[in-house]
Image (cartoon, rainbow, N blue to C red; front, side):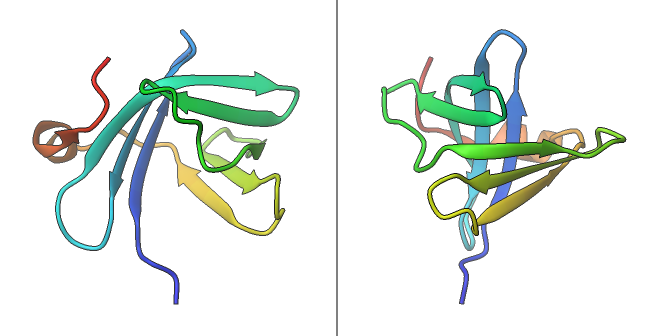
Length: 100
């Protein structure tokens, strides 16, 4: 059974990212870092220099409302992100894990 995780990913044009992640229960944790895109492969590093767990193939829907990230290593685990605003309740209550 897969663990339920609630994730908001912010990819900024300056090459930085914010990842708000909530595991079963609790509040969101904010991780910041940088990202790179080489052709269609997205990779990231957190501000404490820890790399993301995987590199991801990127697929953006034609209407630009969804982003699908598929792990390069196994090509099976994928995440679909829907373009939406991050709720203030998430931004205001998150625990900042990696300070920039």
